[in-house]
Amino acid sequence: MALNKHTIPSWLTDVREDATKSNEWAELSKHIYDAVDQHLSQSHIDYFSELTEDEKILILERAARSLASSDGGRVYENLQSKLSYILDQTVNNQVARKMLEESLADTKTDLVLDTTAEGIVTLLRKNPDQKYKLKVFLNQSIPQPIRFLTWQLYLSNPSERKSFVQKLEKSPKLCLSHQDSEIQRKCDNILKTESTFKEMNGSIGISNSIKGILSYYHSTISEKRSLYDWEYLYALPIVNAHHPEFLKNESPSERSMAMLIEIFIQFMRTLPNAILSSNNPFNESSEMDLYIRKVIGLLDLHDMSLLSYIKNLASKNSSSDLVLLKVCCTPLIKSLFSSYLNLHALMYVWDQYTIGSDVAGYHEELIPIVIAIVLMLLRDQIMSINNVDMFNECIKNQTSFIQTRQIQTILNKYFFKNLQAKLNSSSRVGPIIDPTVGRLQPWEHWHQDIIPRRTTRTKIPNDADKALEIELARRIMAEKAAKEEVERLRRELEELRKRPPKEIIRNVKSDPVEPPKPKEDRKYIVSKNNEIRQPVADLLTKLKYSVGKIAEGEGENNKLLDNITVDDLKLHKEDLKAAEIEVFGHYLGQNEWDSLNDQQKREKSQKMLAVVKRRMEKRFKDSGRF
Image (cartoon, rainbow, N blue to C red; front, side, top):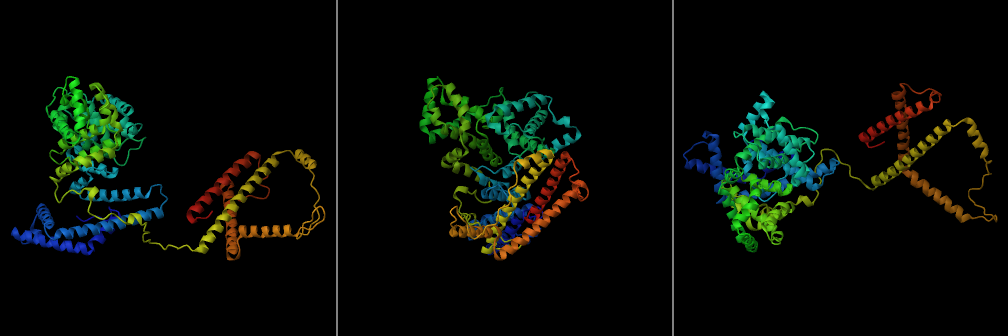
């Protein structure tokens, strides 16, 4: 499918164009054409264009599979390597451009992840049938922008979404449960009390989204009952997956609610039978026993000492390991670990659950594996308890301390291959790649900070430019100090104006001005003994000369800085004139300022200073100069 240039990032278009112009692409295209011709001949079809769209896809998939067992496999790997190199170069150049052109708080890692996520989301929106490639996130947390789209694609139910929109347009009351206020109260209580979801508390958007989902869902179920506790817990991870994040002080849009309701209802319809039956207290199913037996089997394979301890603990309480684990682990299974794991680990587990939603029997494999991993990670705490009640409390209170990386480590060590094979069983083309052992070379441009080609001319700084910048910086500092001094003198002048004339005269009389002393020869300093100190005079002269060079520069720099200073004085004078026009409506006449009272002077001064400051900030933003 051709990509629309108006809806995809420019860097992604560049990647496509560079890839299609490469020799590797031309070589692979030739192999695919040959494979397609062979399949057409075997099927006695003259032209590819005679096929329907579904038949074309089928022929292309068969041709792609045939390449794996021939020389085409090598050609495909060559194109993969070339594409990886192009992506490496283009993405990192794009990131370098952002870091040059923008003042960002994000790190380079954040920018690389955001850029690649942008590309993935764009391609998936254009080609949603490629969602099976998201299985590459097996044992990986999915980045938030990709996560929300992943859940949308795997939990899609357009008819349910359409039904919600129609009801909303007809009458919003049709989307509300008769227990709407009770659902709202319980949602708020969960957000306040459950430690797993404390990050989500305090947001109107999140709270209204959860309530809206559950209220609509309750209005659609046929049984006359209240919502189960587990159904409340299912809604929270789905709302947390929404991208972009909800604003704290705004309710969610109708579009966001439609997407979330679609995901939630499809999620409820695809729950394993063991969970659906166990959610109903009047219909306990033996299918839950199968989950627990799988957990026991996994512990027997990978942690026999822990299983032996659990068996001994159960026997001390006149029970069995099956009964003990069923009592303690059923709440985890019913809630799909919601309110037990911390939020980050919970979202990771739900990512793994979602990417296998289209694979028969995958959930029945994944859930017991996660239960076994939780028990293995809590083995030290479990092996320190001596009764069933403490075992239950341990599961309830300690599970939230488990980190995502701990689950990933155990899963990768013991269970990754089995889950990978399960996902592979329904893959359309080729195997699922394990991202931890990929065959492609690691990206190199990540470490090289290559500066991208710019559309505008870039001036390369030299030593003279650097010296000029230093002089400019010094002059700006001096100018700033001068402004502060002028402001201080202005304040003192204002204070003097406020004081009565008599007080000023009295102060002047009490501190008479001394008559000027006769000028001394600047070349000599005479001591009390009338001795001439020539070295001291020379030193002071040199200091004066050095200070002048530092403050004013020398040579061409001196002339340049003088010109800049003259221009700056003109600009500041224009600023003051503009301030007079804006504040007074005309230029100030002679003695007009003195005719104002003190209150008017203060108010007008503040307004004029604000105008000058605004003009200086605008000038600095436009030209980089005050």
